[in-house]
Length: 417
Image (tube, rainbow, N blue to C red; front, side):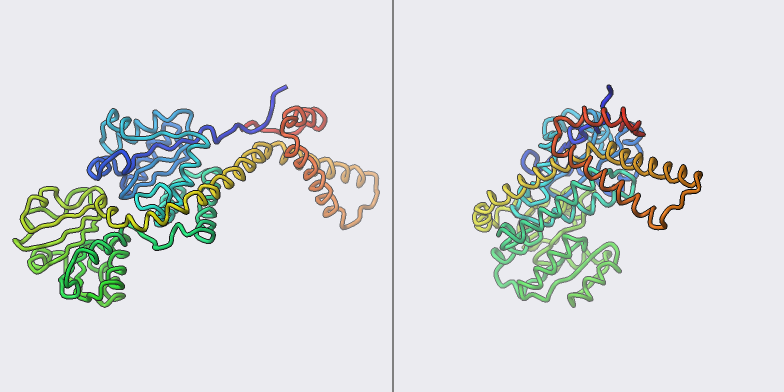
């Protein structure tokens, strides 16, 4: 007889990823995914029966988490969206499936796969990306559970390990580089170009640790920059003033997050200047490196300033991996229990139906029923359902046979998933 156990959806879960480990800043930029593309891409994907997914795109990685029969179609659609070469993409990406894909998600959200070990900013980026795609109708019960578990794991790691001690993110690494390499810092003129999240974090860390109040903010949207300048009591200049401001700039931090360079060689004066480009793709034209008196630092070079912190954090990795491994075991129990849900719910519905049917028969015979009878019926149905569910969970090897047998007796309204 046909089994009604739910299909093992975890086996259809994939992640396709490109990260700093196999691709440099320029290559990652070529395959970066922008938020403004999300609606268009979702519509394309759904037209190809790819409905449950989300895309994470940060300065260090771009990853597509999705459910499908096969990963190839998603890979082709993605390359079409970003106008990338499929053959190149296949060479620089990794592909994981099922439990390996889920384990990877938990490692990424825990900071184990970050370019800066223990960088917990990635969890917030994952949550935001998932929420955006969820609004576009791309979430299912599994993805919801994946993200909730990732958040739970992250909290446990923060509480039980020292992986985040001396917390270092890309923005903090930029500040550390400035503190360690710039002399007479309090007297330097600093310009922050771009006040997105990374830019704001960098600015706050810089104000906190440098003792420098000669920081000027510039952003295409003046109102957005004004909120930051008011909060931190910093100077604010209009975007149109950038060429004039650069004439007196000693340190330029670029965090504009644009698709093309926002700083080019012809914009820079002939003076010593440290430029830190925190954008992916790079927003400072590579030709700037060839200019005299200019030192250009990108996100890859920033990671070299935090090696000592990393050594201390590496001791915590085994603890973190144990937490993830235990969470995966718990998740497997959830998966195992979830496959029985259709049969359990159908059994409960059938018990309630039979009870209500008997009540109608009694009324036809003018037999009075206690007012509390409805509550008693529901409680009895729930207790019987709990016993049925417990048996399935405790005897998974007999689940198929048991469900088919109960179905023969009670004629459950089972719908195949």
